[in-house]
Image 1: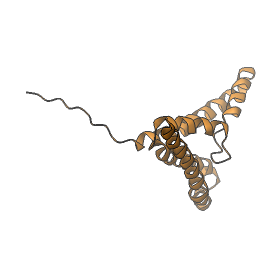
Image 2: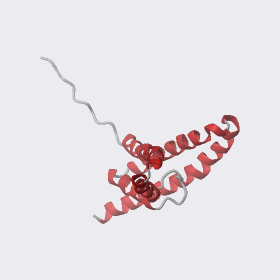
Image 3: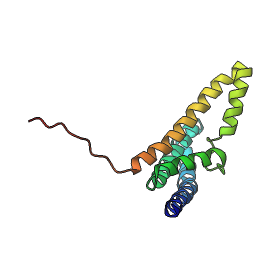
Image 4: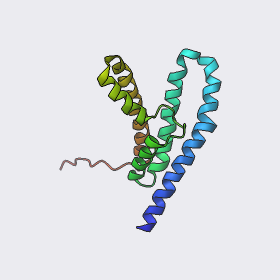
Length: 143
């Protein structure tokens, strides 16, 4: 049991280190370099695409150990983001949901924010899924 906890702690720590390295050493320099080429209107799209790629890589790193470690990392990202993925802000999403019940002008923002969160967390889980070895597919044998 203690060995599993150490493996999980190591995987989550590697995930945070990987996310930090991907964000500051790859994403931000690449985004600043391509911002001049893409123009200002494409900057949010490029930022979201790079965040998805970074979270998929982080999910791949964490998913090598245990599938539940990715859930723990996702919960940690939802609470403590440290600015690594600025689009993930679940407390703000909950406040926006409550505000959208009071005023319908917030509904469009809520849909956009919820879709962005689903895409980002989906990238994390997809990366974790890709880290697992492929299972053999049983084939039908006709006699």
